[in-house]
Image (cartoon, rainbow, N blue to C red):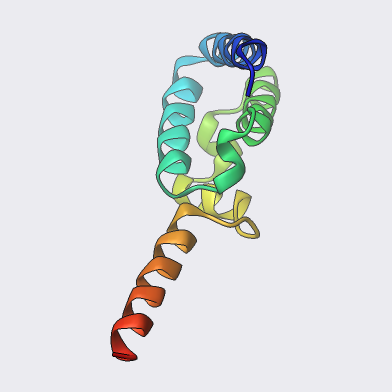
Length: 110
């Protein structure tokens, strides 16, 4: 990754976060929680650009423009909403489980 790629990535992230900050307060709060959740358990490719997060902002902007509350957009179980978004993606939780399984299998072969 070159310096130019890093600079472009930062510009994209700042523009993305400016979109988030222009959302109504309830949307911002839920976005922050979704972001934290996805950074903890989310897909490995989440850190590559802002694709999924940008799509969430698109959805939130649309919901806000229609005058919907954020939970009308996500449903009351926001974690389930997130899980639905990443259901077919390889996650850090998957990597952790694989690591544990490898270590257990290695230890059992001794």
